[in-house]
Length: 165
Image (cartoon, rainbow, N blue to C red):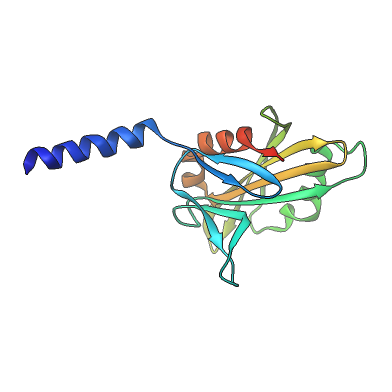
């Protein structure tokens, strides 16, 4: 019995350290999640939302995906600036982070920021990925600051795997 428990523990740790991908295939895009902790958020109607996912608990990591149809020639950096000016800067305790170039199946920029929610330190990481001259996909991750920082490698993997159909 003891050896069976040891074998199960070794197998579980082996699987967790090896990792696996969960592939979400929706009508508009394909995305790979590096951990089974990511799952779709149920809709109020009872169906599954193809636009929102959580990592364990909503405070650990929350992903919202949106498709933006923009004017021809608008860059991901310009859309990030517009979002910051129209939405993000109004969050309580907003602190602007950096903007960096990002390369994956789609290229674009990634921006980070911090804010507070009920006195708790929160963070956001947003990937603006250009699919074509008029379409930019936005992958917006939020969570408690320390928890989101711990899964930053996963947010990068998810954004690199994102591909429109």
